[in-house]
Length: 94
Image (tube, rainbow, N blue to C red):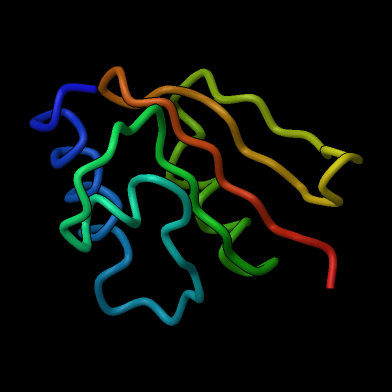
């Protein structure tokens, strides 16, 4: 994955989250990469709660994202691309 596009997407996300009371975490290979681990990144995986899910949904409403429920992982999902970076945002059932 192009690291400049990845960084740009992370800056967009962080910029929108600044000052907001949203619980979220970066999961998967992108989390390892941010911590300095040499790894291949295929997408950005984000986990959040219901409030965060609604917030992320509003952030990407102008983009062709898919919204649904993944029964395999018991999660409401937002999946799509932003600046050619695949995003998967999950709100797991508690």
